[in-house]
Image 1 (cartoon, helix red, strand yellow):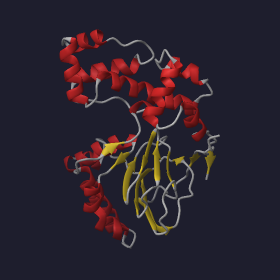
Image 2: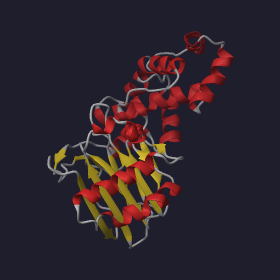
Image 3: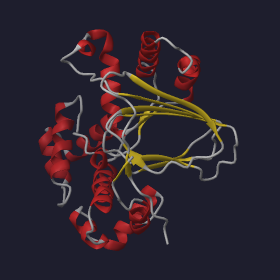
Image 4: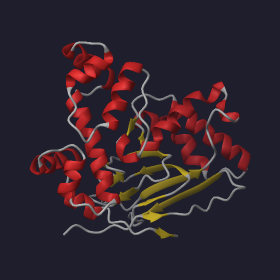
Length: 295
């Protein structure tokens, strides 16, 4: 039987007068349960190869270094011990909450890359080793900066450097994280919105191709070039994201969820879910049994 995790809604130590909360510690294991919180978080881990990181419906086993930005208030996440045997784990957690939007100081041009990064991080954003090494000297010393102004400017420098790096990737699916679909191409955006609104039903290639004003074969190539995914795989990922969210948030049966998310065959749904998520829908639900707790 799968172990049950309690999803804690964490209350941050940050007050309305604070800008940053920084926790820099060395430990032997990860014990804090799966949780979410209103504040934004940048979490850095080193010497923790083999740890399993769960962010929404994404599960990855990390290497020696891991750096993740999370700006989604409902996005559950946890770092689990899993296969890690290190007794010298360092974790730096930086929580912050300042609005990065067009209506304030951060809406100015120098912050455009940070704004874009913060939007992407609503699904969780994992950074490559090259980016981690670039900001490591700033991360390493941040907790020792006593002056709040200089600590804040150093943190902004970290965010800026990360926003300019290449190779970062989002973690949770858009449908699981409840993030609105975005795209630079109006043709693709129209198609994505249609898929998002009609994922429960049969979606025909010919209908989508007509929307984009292309032949079916040309549209398939265009979609793959633009999104990096085959159309069929994109539709499956959207459906699985909604299914994973329903497994967490509802008591509907797995067969009901399967059909409500556009899968017309339960065994096919189970097989695809396990291939994509690394566990069965039943195991996934067991791992995310919800009991909201305030700490």
